[in-house]
Image (tube, rainbow, N blue to C red):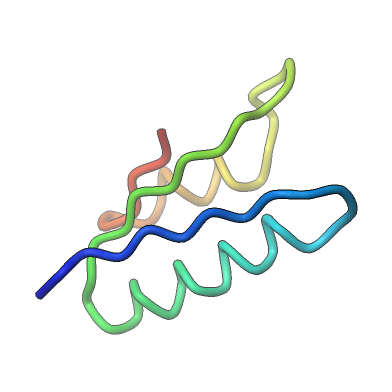
Length: 60
């Protein structure tokens, strides 16, 4: 199976939500997911917390 790279950019809201939605769908189908996000400051993000509980999701 080939890999897929999606890049979401731009101002406003919805980029993280869209990326997480597709990531969860892929995980639900047994695929591995690498998630790269540039975060500011604190590591107190929900994405970080949930990535620790999903074995096939790697948050970079």
